[in-house]
Amino acid sequence: MESLVSLNEWLNDFLLNLGLIAPLFCCILIFLEGTLAFLPLFVFITINVLTLGPILGCLISWIFTVAGSFVNFMLSRKLFSGFVQRRVKKKKKLAKIMNAINKLKFSQLVLIIAIPFTPSFFINLGAGISKIPKVKYFYALLIAKIFIVVFWGYIGSNLIECLINPIEIIKVIVLVIIAYMFSKFVNKKFNIDERY
Image (cartoon, rainbow, N blue to C red; front, side, top):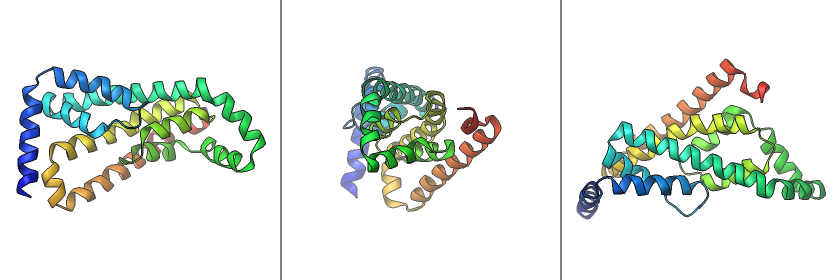
């Protein structure tokens, strides 16, 4: 445990000494994370939170992750949607999967995106090749990514505490439940499932 504490202290000192270069670089990587599956989103959000503070760090990370994910969604729709839709007509199993994705309710979509360990690249790709309306997906990203960013910002900046305290896991579950409940409220208020 001592080695983890010292590693955490070293990482914090290193990132804080980089100044504005660290968050600028991280914002570019956060944007690209929606398209490049191998990039670790939590590392970049943590750097932004540590260097810019919890509010500004989370806000900037949220803007860039929503933008990156939506660009990936749009690229997937433009480049792969037509090909997949043609394949769907020939394959019954693929048609069932695509039909299930197309029928996702707004709150279900928010819940899937808001789970911290789901790879956003594959969610963006799957939504892009489906028939989920663009506006509906964008609204789902806006809500769900708030919880992702807050989760990774908190976990990353309190890594040692999260490793030794099981209550932190309960906080994760609570965040996902709040995201789901909030999406139900937004859906009811603005009737997103019916409108889009």
